[in-house]
Image (cartoon, rainbow, N blue to C red; front, top):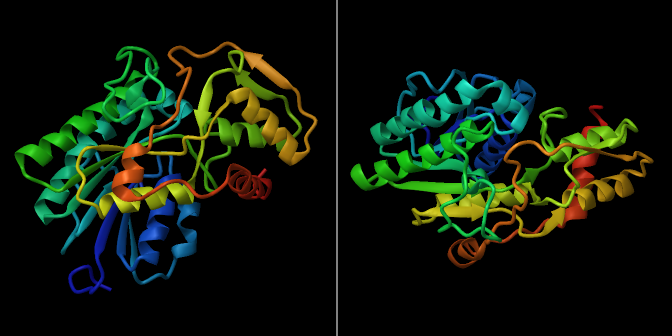
Length: 317
């Protein structure tokens, strides 16, 4: 099917082979979109899209979005999700992380402008850094160390937000900015350095659970289908300021580890290690804005979502 004469809305998803990008692609196809996914597999995987082989409303382009993006025909929506997104990834790939947040965002915005498409930036709660207010509201400017080891990701996303807002104000483009908090679910990489796959993988193989610091730092975990629903609603809204999407149900890392052990029935111990530099001590979204404007809030209970995720990883350990 050509992108020139399809009756469906046409969406371009950068980072479409990633954890979130692939789930977003599935949601868009369910909503009747024709989807063009772009990925260079630097952290994404073809396995995340293999179930779409033969789908006549799906097209894949293998490309680095820091290079010029060419898409023929009409485009209605550009969803910019391309970026390394875990500490291991952006510590190993600092330059590509900075480039996709700057050049990649510039190219994706340029595509949206050329096509007169609506643009959504997948930003992050990391724009708040190690926050000095709790929970985090969208009008908080953050506490970020630009030259620390996490700065490449934090500042790339902060720059991407600034560029998105500049295109909105200067070029009068229809843009959205979502600040994504900790999300989990199937298709996460087992060894991507994030706490959910790390703990589940360790528990399933009876290894000690690695906890950095004393485990009292907090995170708030949102199941992927809830997150994607919030992002979809934001794109279809007329709201242009940053929007937190995440689950405000906060727990300590130690509590999270103990829950994983209970659900898996593992006898693993907890192995405490030194806390990395600039690791946020608290993380909890204030979702007042999403509730009032998008009529959105998470619906999947933690135990339900984490059991589904454990089942996914059990088949891959």
